[in-house]
Length: 324
View 1 (cartoon, rainbow, N blue to C red):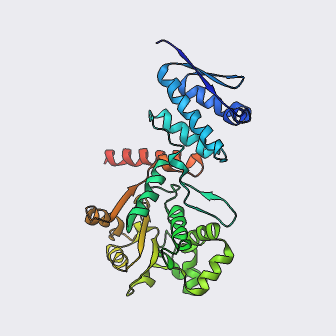
View 2: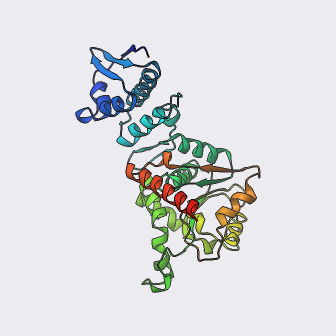
View 3: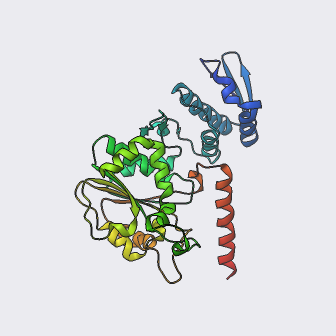
């Protein structure tokens, strides 16, 4: 097949070493994946290769440049996501799509979606009163839900933030843990505390906790309540029973929004207990105002090995099922 050349003009020479990466790491990955030559020329870059590969690399570099012009760092996670996006044959530019600001932490860090799946998730949270975010670990389901809750609270769209989880043992027994009941359940709620601390800051978190504007509690504490004007997050929802899920969803009052997150591959319920999250998928899929967003390994934003681990488990579990 005939090779073509394309010249990219880059108006800021400082961008070129960033695009190439430390010791040309980024460029070497691009060359290996797309089988192109990429040469630095005064005032720009020259791409040589097959037409489809040249087009993909051109758009990849355009997205990187768009991020740099917006004063964003080109992190390994972002570079790897963009690289995967175009390597899989997707032709839509994604940098602008990922430039949606959710909120800013007390340290001045901007929180934005890092994958297309995350962007779809936050768009649905804005549009719907009940959103289910379902997918593997590391996809940002809980952190983004907390960021959206803090943003709604800061804008006075809600008066309270309520974060809850079922206190289900993952191989441990609550009764054997030290301390009173609050001490026993605190470890289960720690990821929710951590997300709030990072986004809101410890001082604001404690101030609003004292005022009752923030509540972090086990799911059992929701029973018998009607919750108005609140942003409610139910985390680890795969570990709810069907009764608990129904109880939680019927707590929703006027002016409230609920986000339910979970990973149906990590259910820790006792044998014989069915997951309320899995049942909820079947019962509520056609209800207007409720949306289901599904993440997969492409949306993993932790260490790149997490994505590979998830893939390896998927292959193993599929093979096991086929052998039985």
